[in-house]
Structure formats: C-alpha cells, structure tokens
Amino acid sequence: MPKITVVGTTAWGMTIGVILANKGTKVDLLARTQKEAVDLHNTGLKSEGFVINDMPANFRVIEDPCEALADSQAVILAVPSQSMRANVKIISHFLSKSILIASAAKGLEAVTKKRMTQVIAEEIDPKFKHNICVLSGPNLAREIVLGLPAATVVAAEDNNVSRAMQKLLTTPNLCVFTHHDVIGVELGGTLKNIIALGAGMADGLGYGDNAKAAFITRGLTEVSALGVAMGADPLTFSGLAGLGDLIATCSSPLSRNHLMGVELTKGRTTEEIASSMDGIAEGVNTTRVAWELARDLGLGMPITEKIYRVLFEGLNPQEAAQELMRAQVDHELTGRQWKLFSFLNRRKLP
Image 1 (cartoon, one colour):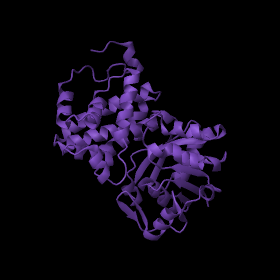
Image 2 (tube, one colour):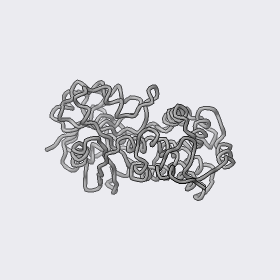
Image 3 (cartoon, helix red, strand yellow):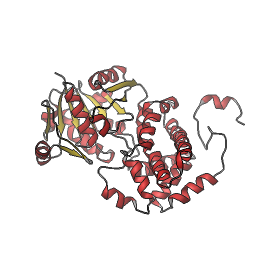
C-alpha cells in the first residue's frame, strides 16, 4: 500500500488526505501539536467551516514529522502561503531523495515575493529539488470531499515527477493532468484570487453577469501578462490552472476570496471580514505582492491596482468600478509592457 504525507490541517489538506485514503492509500496528516492531533481524532476532521466525520481506517493524524514521513512516497504541503517556509523547515530533515514534494498552496510569500515552489527549494537539501512539483486547479474542497467530479493539474520540471504524482493523486472522481510549466500553473492558482475578490465586489454591487464576465475576462488577460513577465507560458492560463480555477473561484459561494469581495461592498474592513471567516482569503496578501511585482516590472495592471486601493487605501468598491469603466482603453491584448503573444510584435495593432 503506498503512503502519502499531508502537511496542513486545512480544509484542502484534510480533503486531499481523505480522498486518497478512501482509494486505499495510507495517509498521515501532520498536525501542529499532539493536542490538535488528538482533538481531530476525537471530534472529527474540523476545518474552515465543515466537518469530515468518517475518518478512513488507513488515515491517521499525528504530530511527529519523523513518523509521518517515514516510508512516505510523497509529501503534500497544503498550508497557508505565509507559513509555508516554517512548515518546510520542520519536515526538511526527514526528506529523502525518493519523496516527491508537492505544493498545494496558492499564494506568494509576502516579504520575498516568491512562489511556493521557490520557497520550498530554498529550505530543502539541493539534492531533492528535482522532486518539487505544484498541485493546482479548480478544486473547491467541499465539493471534492463529497465525491463530486473534479480535475486538477500537477506540474513539475521533471516529467517523471509529474507522472509519478499524477499516479498517486488520481482517484475515481479526481482527474489529474500533468504539465511542465511550473511557473504558469503556480501563478494561475495564485493570481486568480485577486480577480475573485473583484468578482465578489461585482456581485455585491449587483452589477450583473455582463459586467462580471467582462471583469473576469479582462482579469485573466491581466493575470496572464504578469505571469508571462515572470516566465510562464501564456497558454497555461487558458487551462485548468488558469481559466478553470478562475471560473470556479469567481463564481462559487464556497470561495473565500469571492466572499471577501462581497463583504467589502457592505462597508466592512478586510480585518473585520477576515476575523469572521473560516480559513484565509489568500487574495488579500496576493494583491499586495502582485501590485508590487507589477510596479517593479513596469507592468500596467489597472484591475490589480484598483483592488489594491480598495483593500489597503480605503477606495470605495463602487468608485473603483467607475474608475475602471472610465479608463482609457486600447486593443484588447495590449497593455503597458505586456508581452503576451509574440505574434503581436510582428504586426501593427489597430
């Protein structure tokens, strides 16, 4: 029986662990403390607003990283982005050259502006870096734990790593695709949270489906531009880890980032909303980091800028929307310093 270790008692971490255990994989979920491990065993897997009562027989919650990683074929890090580095440091001493290492987090480190796979690479033995991959896609935990069909993407620089992780993660109701574009898959899952915040604001303001569709589409183009500037393949953003994740996060009431956007239109602050939410809306921190990256790269990102001002400068969401509508527009695929598609450089745009 194969064994997988999941780090992170988040809703996504627990969901991954349970669906893998249900297909016959041995799963160890690494808790932060012995008390947390005991509580989860006694009361059911409680996280972020829902409870998984039926714990599979081959699923256990333990607090010892050495025991959790012993004989494991892969470790999946399903933790908030800002705690990724600390969690990798905890497990780094127990890794071996045969353990695959997957990031299932969707965020950027605030201080360094680095992607999660970059953070992982900095904290582990350089000999194990080739085992790093990223898991991302339209994966709302509550639907997946109920057994509803879904698809996801695992990306790695080494095709053997992505295929091995694909084999471990595939279940009857979770279709796992492989990809080579680690940067694109990672940024697709991360940056879409910014657009989900705005989509929530659009819904909260009652702007309708036309406006929301236009906003999501323009948001995807903007996200793609930043991704390409950071080394991603633009086509990645039309796939599951880009457009697919964007659609799910911008439209579902299960999305924390969408909920945050809706609540902001009611005059509440980000701090008030965050304190009342189960889990973390990663888009808040991601907006700040993406705005800083765009500024450093000289990229024009009007949507990100407006959401940044709503979150951190007190701009009213309705005024932000009006400013976007009043903005000067050009060809749909052009923007300041955008280099989305090479063929656009070979002809003049109208």
